Image (tube, rainbow, N blue to C red; front, side, top):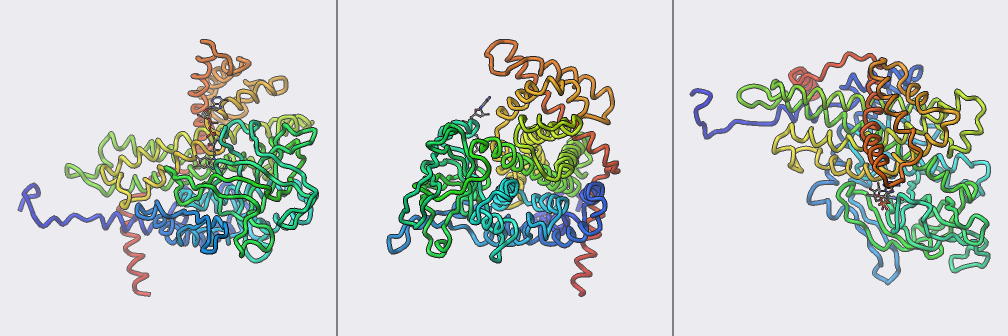
Length: 576
Ligand SMILES: Cc1cc2nc3c(=O)[nH]c(=O)nc-3n(C[C@H](O)[C@H](O)[C@H](O)COP(=O)(O)OP(=O)(O)OC[C@H]3O[C@@H](n4cnc5c(N)ncnc54)[C@H](O)[C@@H]3O)c2cc1C
């Protein structure tokens, strides 16, 4: 029978592709990921490499399957539910999630990622990077929120009252036996970008209430986007009534249940009004809630709440968005490139068509530069002891000009990276989906539809694009006396070749020469358009430089070799 002749016994199978995709170990089988860890972890490399191999054995298989199962099309609608009342008419607002997400959360939180006895800055970062290969999965948002909560509370550790200190010890150190989960509730119905417009009120009440608490702060009002609403504690913004700073936003930590009440399901004087049906991150419960006098503990000076929330909590979340999407992009690029080598059309692997060759190279280059950029930005964060200065005013108190500038660059890089990576990721995943043709759209064929939906959420979380572009522009105005735009841009791209740097510096300086982006005239409109374009070009140049500094011989994984290796591995494991 000739090859083109009809044959009703169609022998086609995807099994070889599945063997490669499903056996691939995210860390052990990825020399690029290992090279990044080696370059940045330095002296700690051997220990971290051992830990990563062990964790990767879970993340690449068990965690991956749990994440997929929870987001299965049939499960998606029911993975998060709220049960308002029990059978005996008690208001409980119980959050019900599927077993898979709960298991995943328990196992990931048990890693004690923020516990200084269990992890160093680098081991924490690379483990986070590894875990994000499974996308948000209903767990990484609570992880990011807990990270922000711990770092905010740590900043004021010596000033915390005993109850708040216990909260910190529970979330950070696992006091009580398990690592508790944190959340952050800032956004209100009237707006998330404009945090100063918050209306939730904090009132210091001396009188004892039904819950037995007196002389404490209590919150009143509504929060409209409360992710990880199943958490044990939340960082919440509110305006303290009757204080000189009553128009300013303060930061509080709010227990979901007062001590002893979790088992009884008596919430800390607030109701969960509704869970939101979402396009992405559907395993993660996001709610609308109303505070009716919840006991709250202030963290840091009341009048500095906004600066602390934005400068510490949201900045950490922005780092997470970028590292998370960079990591997910690596997996997406890998699985799509391997499929293109497996799949044939017109008698040849589709990876051999010149149009596809370009697309495969671009996809991998974009994923790798995002990953290299994420490591480089995070290395700056670690350089400063994982400490972010909350606002420009505090930054200006630093006398050492080199340090002040470097810290300022980190502040801007966190925003720039968030905008660019969160904007690139949905486009990158969409392109990767196209490699699979029609199969790329099928929910049960691959994980990309879930990752695509998650990536769209990342664009909006923690400061949408416009808000951050405006903030960076405003920051540049505020520091121009001691850090001119031209110097800032050249310093950012240090090491890159002149042909790349010069035009970017010229354009950046032109854009920053305009004093405000808020005027509605022709020139401002043109500058805004140029800034949108340049922000991407600028950060891509930074990422490319990070990739060049890695000095890694980029060769893409070979499907045929992996297939041979994994079949051999399967055989050996079968024999054992
Ligand atoms: C799935 C999901 C989960 C979330 N979870 C949480 C959570 O747990 N906690 C929490 O606090 N929040 C959460 N959020 C809210 C999120 O942080 C906000 O949606 C975000 O901050 C934007 O606020 P907004 O939705 O009110 O949009 P708006 O502030 O109304 O913005 C609308 C548009 O206006 C643009 N815009 C606003 N200001 C400017 C400006 N100065 N210049 C130019 N353009 C501007 C924005 O870019 C945006 O495109 C969540 C959001 C989503 C989608």
